[in-house]
Image (cartoon, rainbow, N blue to C red):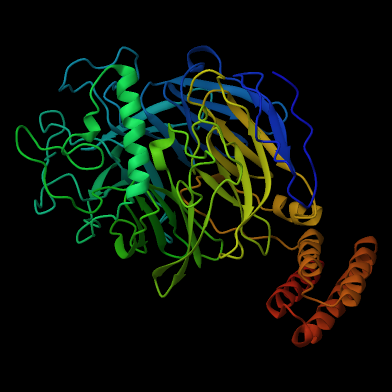
Length: 591
């Protein structure tokens, strides 16, 4: 592996953009970095080498990386040298993972998924040896995971979401997003295929699994809420559809087969069953992914043609509050809430993740993020954000998975764009998102399109961890610049999670610290939100207080009073009040 490129560190976007024209190569591709540094790359080994690496979850010092042959468990306590603790073979797709305490959950949707986690697939069209749903593992002993049970579902599990119910310490729930065809009732009793008017259909419903923590082997489906009833047919975009049709035709020509997606019932519609004509178009009948925020009682459903806002205060019985439609959004893929829960971002996986959709000919509104405010439980659109650097036709690229970075007072997010790399952007101003850091590699192959790039990129306890589809596990750190300060990064590093599933969003809470106070001062200086004289005086007071523990409380209390008195004259009164409260908390913590 080549040494990581030395990043450009600056408050202004590098020009020309170094991401354009990078050398291709699986292991020796060219790199470009701005305001972030690649710490380590850990290539896969054994039967994990060559498998598609998928989503991530975190528990304690461990990162768990799913892939289409199973999962890998890494000790990342030293981010520069991750240690592979366990490679567990269990072929399926997508094998997205999540954790809760000692339990690991993994999605299975493909037909080759065997109940014994063996290779070889399941050749019979109907078989009791097939598992499509949620596998539950006990990873209390990380070196010896135990498969506890598998919960079969009628459409498998493409992705899933762990849901905690505030006040319930005995169970967790799992929202299953299965996008496959309905399975035979001979394979899974009770499965039935039908239209939206059929009360027994396995379509148009969300399957909810309850997992008793003391007896996870009793995990089972407990409800199937019909949150998709009454939804409109998603709008289409003729220009984008023409691009998709041309791509399908080109792929079919390369295979020497007809373009089946162009036939009636193909592409995004449902096929007719048997010789029957296809049914009329409907709204979505399943979500691709759901992000829950239990503390505020809301969830964002990215549901193929629409974005949904759900009430999850009763975790087993979510209720739809609102739905958003947008002709610029091809495939609503995933969602992220702002930390205060007043905004939400939906991603658009135009092309399904396997297509180049960040070319200079692709519109910036397509394959992008759509940013919404949440007002009276309604989704109100504000703006789009898309990776600013054009990628080549040899790089699958589109908006994919990311997470917030716990910078206090700001909404900063890191996001994967497959072979477009990682983009870190600030969307505090929901109308004007702005990129502030990035990392990118050249194409996996310089002669043909080979799937690769970052599937997921998440902040976890001080670092950014990325699941690289073809290259393994990457770990990064953000660097201080004019766009993000060392104090802001130091405050972010004080936020520690015992576990982290990005789709089960937890509120960031910053403990009292000098770094937190200084981070707010840096932000006020950047925005001219407080007079420079007071900012200078506050910084001096903090420096003196930190050097003199015996007099800290009095000095900090006096500073908080001075800041409160200055609030009315400040340009950013809300931020000054936040600063004053942080100083008060720090003073009280010094008792």
